[in-house]
Amino acid sequence: MKTGKRVVYIDAIRIIACFFVILNHTSGYINCFNAADNMPFPLFVWRLFVGMIVKAAVPLFFMISGSVLFGKDRTYVEIFKRIAKMFFILLVFSIIANVLTTKSFYLPGFIRTFASARVDGARAYWYLYSYMGLLMMFPFLRYVAEKITLRDTMYLITLRLAFFGVVPALFRILNIRLQSNIYLAEEFQPALVMIDCVFYSLIGYGLDNHLDKDRVGGKKILLLALILVAALLAEEYLTYIAGMDQLFDKFNFLIAVSLFLLIRYAFGKVSSESALGRGVTLLGGLTFGIYLLDPCIGVYLKPAVHSLYPACPSILLVSVLYCLVSMMIGAMLTFGGQNVLKMVIKGER
Image (cartoon, rainbow, N blue to C red; front, side, top):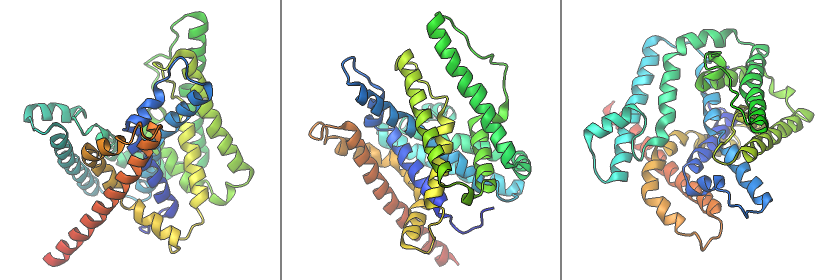
């Protein structure tokens, strides 16, 4: 169970997931799914490899949210205070991002698009809608988390693998071979497994709290790496045979789980008092601000950095550079804002 003290590997996961989220909204990442007929096959494999692994960003955020959120009881007042805080943050930054992007503000249009998470310039904030929904279900999911065991966690993962991974993969192959349209009934709805924010938060809590870090090492780490690569290659193959317009991402949860445990292993023994640990926890504590600021910063920073292409022949490399610069600027602004807020609060006291 987590305490109030920052956990190095949780913050390491936050940093990596935050980088993936920012990269996900760049032209270099979008270009990963553009395949020309004469493209060398290794380049095709590499592009889809990047495209698929970056999709683990939001599942990773949900997994660490579950690990941290379900660690203690919270009253309805506490939960709705957090929901109100998230709603206020979402509203303010949606307005800022929209105004910076469109150079105007049309209130009726904003209300309509805000309700549907389609605000111009602020679509990257859709995660907060899911997070608020997760918070609303916290009192009930907390009961599940209190009782969940490692066996229960593996059961959920197995169900997801069987019915939302293997079955859709087989159906895709059969549909191509038989020129058919086989699909799983929409009425089949195992909610804890199929609703992403619920599934990932529960397995994140279950794995982090019931899978001993000391039991995951050596051959098991190699196995996790193999599962990660196998899931990526399977998604690439199933996308390749159907065409890039029919992306197959049903094994994303295996990618996310593997990354979660691999990062936990890599940073699990890093002390929060070490130089690396302090750096990771400092940056990890700023990732929410970095995420919120990127759509605002990106209005001006993206064109500037991406103008390096084609002088730099790789648009993906340029986008990676953009992500690093955006995270650095966002971290400095967030750090400065946090310190100003602390001074204001102290001054009021």
